[in-house]
Length: 172
Image 1 (tube, rainbow, N blue to C red):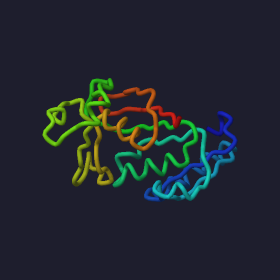
Image 2: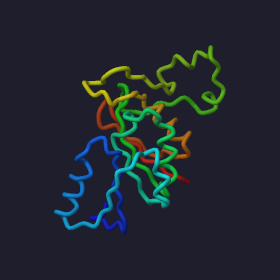
Image 3: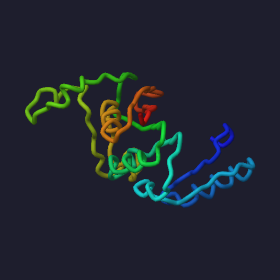
Image 4: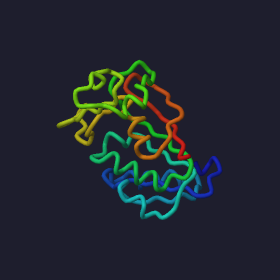
């Protein structure tokens, strides 16, 4: 982002990967870039006390025990746009949503709950592909529903693989 002209760039990592910040600093220093790095939990982003034009949230969502709490914290620092990348349950590289009016009136016995298009999240107990830091896997519909519930407006989705999606959101 700094190479593209950003006035200020902040990289944040929770510190679970001890060398992540160190490696990022090394890369920035090697390239002669003035970038700020901090060890900070995503849940504590409000402490930054500022907003950013663009927030990149790549490969983080499924590692979070409290994803909506984290996305609300991300929203507090996101002034314009969010780009989020996450793994998902298998999909056909398309977003096939149920209309929002139907989702607003779901009952416990509603047949819509059983539709593939219903926003769902699979909980991971143990490890996912030998990674014990994965807590859940959403379907694409759940990803955009979760983003909307945290005051983001998803406006573009791409599907690089049948188990992944990238969503661009605005805040207005």
